[in-house]
Length: 341
Image 1 (tube, one colour):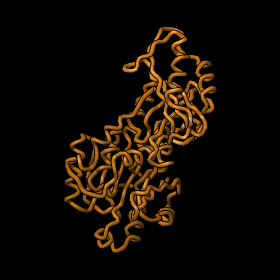
Image 2 (cartoon, one colour):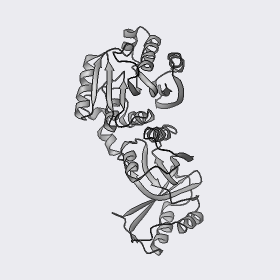
Image 3 (cartoon, one colour):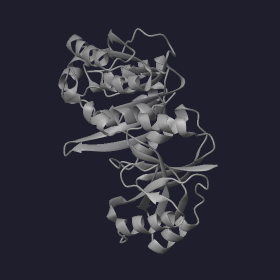
Image 4 (cartoon, rainbow, N blue to C red):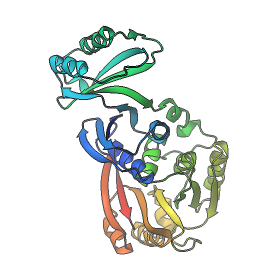
């Protein structure tokens, strides 16, 4: 069995962990959560390799680094150095290395430099050479919750990709949409994978569909505004993803029963949506019943809302899963509800 650590970006306390679990489950990877620490998740698994780690790094939004755990110690310098001295590392060819230490929220009184120098000396004394620019192996020590998680970095995520996909940088922009990092995290929580049939029944400008499509899903989107659908087409074409768009109401979709694998959606909560649907309650009741109908058994819906939808979802037949909140600004807190069929 191998211990794998995910260093989390920390935007929210719970969504990054749920994203990793959803991504692992989508690939049918057997794993056991060993430690759930602040901004670090450690799992035990025997069914993950370097190729799969690279694929995970390419699709996870709220993970910074994926680390193969060489050792775990208490977060004091004596124990950290002792742990490094006990490490079983390569005994074949020599390699170059560097060591980077990260203190989560700077809670530890130990300096990062002392940790890096101490572990570096252990490696140097074993005959390996430091290379601060382009090492063969990058080691990382993460101090969190009075523990030090240490090991070589297997893969890192490309945070700059999310900057390039920000809504205002796409061909068609409309305010009030989800940022791509959160959208991708929700796509992963929904257990989307390559080949999945993915639906967003309130697709708007297509931002959530873009994230699902970049994973390799076949995406479907619905909206009742032709202008917005044309904008979604521009964005989806720009990213060359597999998609179909439908001009139709989410409360009466022209889709057969049990035809989609996963749904992620951020319904409109503006006044125009209420006028068209007559009331928020009618809008949610009808669309949740339709989403339940078209979702295959075992599929998952992740819904963003401003107010509770649990009663409407249960009445539609869904089983309640996790519920997260994300504060956007003083007058808006998003509710993210995970629903299973």
